[in-house]
Length: 450
Image (cartoon, rainbow, N blue to C red):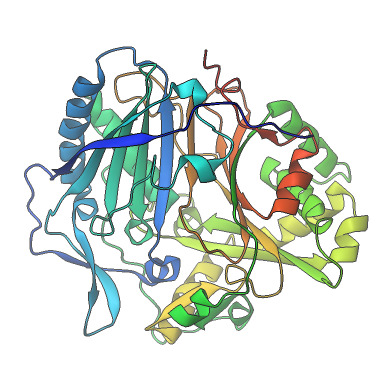
């Protein structure tokens, strides 16, 4: 399916003001937070969530800005590390969070087009330097952009050292609750107390998944053409159809397992000759795995992530059914969804500190691959700060060099079971995905913008 980009005037964004928002009633000026081992593994790079709102139900741009600043200052009182600084400790050579209330950065901007004129599909055109402006001095920053139609977009950029998607989702929900003058539903836990065992010990299979690396290794990753940043809409009917295909052998498979099997099968058909095996990875949140079902880590702020990696031969994947590939996916994910794995991973990191550590698949080891992150619990429609619910909410990375293709799934703001999928792809994979009806290039029509 050939997709034509919408005709539009040159998209420009004019930045008008920057403000620093500090936490109210700050009491932690001398506090220094040491990063946990899982924080160190996640590393430091910006993660951006962006939300689009049609013309606000209440208030104009100026009143919205003041309301956001006021409620953000109150939210930072509870999430004080987000208003701090992240610096390198010269003794340990590892980053730490200085909770000195330097503040969060809020950028105001104006776009020269209506919201419906934005290219929602091609994120290379829309994000970097326009809807996302990053100042490395601030671990958390916000950009509020107005459009000629009266709509606005709000982008939130976090340093990954502050936390993972679960932590950022908690922060955004707390901010929404405060903006709507409601008590916050969960008080954040900033202890970062995921400590290694004494002595540390781990299953040697982790050496196959993770590696110690240097900045030079990262800069010298195998050259790829994984450059296209795209946004797609996936109908609920397509998701349900894939799940039925994945369950044909009588096994119960999740929607993500079914979707992964479909993507993996398409991906290997884009490979050039010579690739014998293919890898796919999945980000897994360890909170419920470490603590069981008592939800004692539900408000933990920090990183609690691992990567599950599945591998199969290209020939097998090409010939297998969706249900057969879904079984491979299920088995790979099941290996890391347990307490023992996360305790081993914490100890593996302890045995390899200090220094950079990454999963091998992210570095591009083993040939072309793809990592999928599921954000099915991440707030989308709930992000109503008092001026209406968003028509779109998703995530995208501004990283320009990556060793693996990447996809992130979020529930659609429609609330009808459909998904929004952001992706970083190589051209052949993007073309293959768009040749079927499952991956629909995101458009203003999907968002019901008039």
